[in-house]
Length: 257
Length: 372
Image (cartoon, rainbow over all chains, first blue to last red; front, side, top):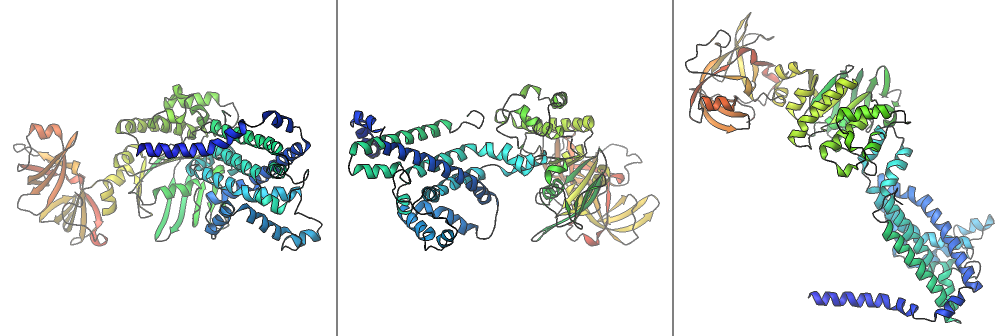
């Protein structure tokens, strides 16, 4: 029985690692050369720019949102809970389609934005919105768990020692939930970086404008496999470093970082 | 001076308390779990908002129903210690103690507080590296450092072992003396309430049943509920049969007892309370002095259970249906070889009998022992 378990484990590991090995065995020279390709550079810039903006917005609105979910009781909380989790199970293509019909020229919100002169679909804003839509729930879920894990009595104690609610948050709540918040933010960022389906539906695939790295892989694959491999290498490296940072920072406090 | 008069309802539970605390006084609140002690502290600290009433400290309102005033927790300067030490796990002991202090001028003060509490050597440790008793000392130091108007303590020592609990009680009295901080100490432990309190309040079901000096509360409970809480195990219901300048004669459970004077009339029903440790053992051959000769009875030991220092006996009065609980030091038990079946003489000293008032309101009193 034990050996059967080991065998299944080995099959899983083999399946997951073999593509990476294939990538390493690939035509390295051409891959390195392709890194200088303007399409790749542009896609990299688009990706970094859009994910950075997405992450900032996600934290700015997601942190208070998760605080509300972690601390307060109110009618409709269960419903809100589902709303925040829905994008996690929604296929990205569906998410992109929904964003398009909402913010498109004839959409219920897009109509008014068009009148005001804002055109969202097929812009960098759309890329960011698609990323936020799929990645924010990951951060909110994680941050909520982290904040819920902070003992209420510690916050009360801080208040009796003279801390305003704002000081309490910075001096007690944030440091004690730091690990979970950080890992939530990194996972959300990684998800935003990997975003493909919703982006292509809502923002299109315009090189230099809305073409992110995953979209560039898709486009390049049709004419130049080496180019798409080069982009893949970039993404694999990024994913690896993200995981490594996560593992290293886990268990380390706010101050050691 | 603290003046508290607050109401709070939670479904069926109603809390209504009204009391004053003098400057520098340690008030202990004694009551069973769920009686509303912790809620009362939460109301005073400002963690929970009352439904009505007012809380005033030195003429300044901390809470008022109308016009509405509710000073937030962080502006009240009221220290709050719970059973859990609530130290910040991401800070060192030193950082915890300095937490509520603004500026760095407090170095000397911090050192003084740490010395009084005997925790100077822990400064650089993390809360997880020190013992429960030490954690509670750090928690006390941290609260003392903010120079609180009042220190609220919610069963702060009940999670500690006996040895540390006793030591910390001493330390607390030391703090009170050195820093002159008024304290409200909540506990369900009789000994603790008695040892620490300048005054004692007995609380049950959201109400103060009695508040007064500890001798008043422990010697002269106002009713049977209080009598039970303060350890009067023997509660007797009887009728006043005689009245004189020296006291009452009360007939209860087939015996007549001489009791101290109380405001009541002949024929009235009264309830009496006697602490087990106040019942005296009288040697067979002893010539009984004036002081105790009034209430001497012969009884048979029907149960015996030993503790580390004292032995609890259940007595059956000879030819009467009255049972009494008494407490004797182990050395007396050994010396006179007192065991089950043994016939002994006991004295219910007159001055130690509490007349709990007319028995009309006490519907639940059984004859003889209330609780065994």
